[in-house]
Image 1 (cartoon, chains in turn cyan, yellow):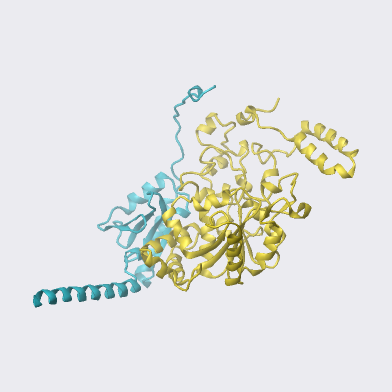
Image 2 (cartoon, rainbow over the protein chains, first blue to last red):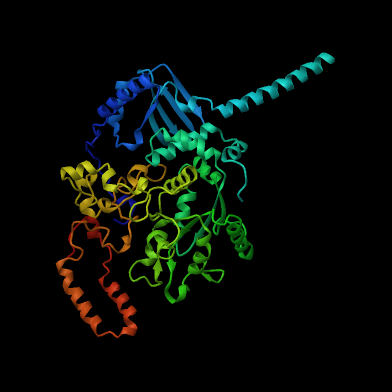
Length: 147
Length: 366
């Protein structure tokens, strides 16, 4: 074996483990958190990356939660996908970096995920911004009227 | 240099939105096994924080730790931690050199006396007055003893700073020691690894900035959130270990099926680190996922813990080797004290077993 070509290529027929059986316990946890949201208004979240989740676990979770009617993409230093599942109040939030690598993934049990909400400080900044634009616009309009 | 602006103001000036920041904190909270709800609180606190002064000293090391930190997989998002700190001194990154660089270090210490975080990578040689590693004519020991008393806390980055690492490996020719062997009156956070996982370094800094305290540490001074579990606990191959399915060589059917690498020398069961969950190279994989056992690089004296290819369950010296050790010991008896160090080196050289193709195939030595 003196070169790369000397290394044989072996095709495998292996069936790797695809599930840790974590989907069902998670669904029960989601049930408890959704019940809590309705009763107290308190949001909850599950960090999917903190658990050993394999492909079949994900598929089962996605299959049972289903697809809802809201899909949003936040473009903040890489995309974040926010999707409401078919179970209202249960959101699937995936944060990617600019290389499309998953940074964090959560199931959020809430009325609206935090990342979609406008922060009060940003709203104040927005108000200042809007007033500044209105002032500029009215000055331009005034100038045109004078002409 | 440090300034009076909050981090949120600094970020806004750079066009970085609050949502980006929240996303960064969600990633860090996830890595640090914090409750997901903590991300919001963390973002609020971090946004209101003033930039933290950091002084980074490099001693007896290879610069791999700094490479790990500065070449992390998601540079744009990881850059946020550089916005959260003011890296006031780092020899490799500092633009100037010579007396100017030394002046910057002195200025950073005076300006933030008692407030800055001191990051250290590399071990500190003590033998022969510490002459084996000097900077601007001063030994590493001298510099550390000068800077550390002025710091709020010390982060020992990498296995060399945390435990002595490879420079301390037998026969430790320079008398290398860890930071904690010298500094006794400051909180020290050990972030070992060869190199450490970049987001672990970032996470420790983020924790300090948001909570104002150092994270909970284990008995070796490592943050429990990253070093609380063994690699084995979180390894995706763990089910095969439980089923008794082991690869016997690196190219047998077991290896191809992704079975447990325990019998090929994997040190996962005795190694505490976050590789199995955080992974490397942008979350692509970690050594075990790439088909090689864990070397145990985040544990003390990993370089002297026997062959990387011997199972943890195997005796540290096999019966056949006892005869060779007996000869080596007999030879050592007659050696005069003045050349004891040389004899140690000779014994090390004698007992050192070069890696062979048979080792890789898992065959017994002939």
